[in-house]
Length: 282
Ligand code: CO8
Image (cartoon, rainbow, N blue to C red; front, side, top):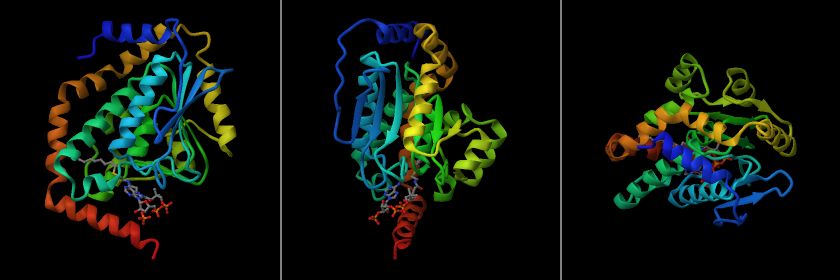
């Protein structure tokens, strides 16, 4: 269980002096630190749609750890694609899955979420493309969202015949009012950029990626005069219930996921959904 003392130690670690050493942590994600601002940009780079498979999730977690350990001033999460932030979980990991890999996959998703949702440095999603389901989970795990026009974002799980786990809902509810969240989740609603702004699912719209980057940096710079330890602990306190719940029930969460995914009806639904994606092109 994560205690305040644990969080305090984690926060301290992120602000103590040390050697600054950043690198591209893995081909599927890159981490670049702006020397002037000290802000790290974590870029998802798994064409064509940044489908969150085991390897990408592992790489995301590693990159977040790297950013925290190197005392970055903030984290901006974005995508190397011009049209997709992330298409969410890689459906191929869940359709006709290999049993052992399926376990590792879900565990890697839990780990990546704990790292991002609980990340001590200010975090912003630069949503430069479509962001359904797991893509929305990543974006809403950050503290602030800047999105480009003409894309969509939301938790559309019910449209796939599956139910977003509790912690997806917790993350959504950290951003949206309860009634909006409930309606959106039950409908499997994907918000357009404009709708997302109106609903409060995103914080700002920017016309270009450059403009979005400047807005992300401005949000992070707004903490310049705030004590980073106090900031980090305050964030942890706000998110503690959700994080503790995950840590205490992650085995149960895994078992529930395995049970649901292995249901013949769910497999059939996933197969049809994948076929629909392919048929779109024909
Ligand atoms: N997983 C695997 N493959 C995908 C995914 C995905 N999520 N999304 C797209 N692809 C594939 C397509 O099938 C296509 O493959 P191919 O080239 O072989 O035909 C390729 O990626 C490119 O896709 P598109 O041609 O559709 O690209 P577009 O640019 O036209 O559209 C979109 C991009 C909007 C992202 C579109 O692909 C889309 O809507 N994708 C599906 C998004 C989605 O519904 N994701 C939900 C994933 S489930 C999830 O994240 C949470 C699950 C929680 C589990 C809880 C269980 C208990």
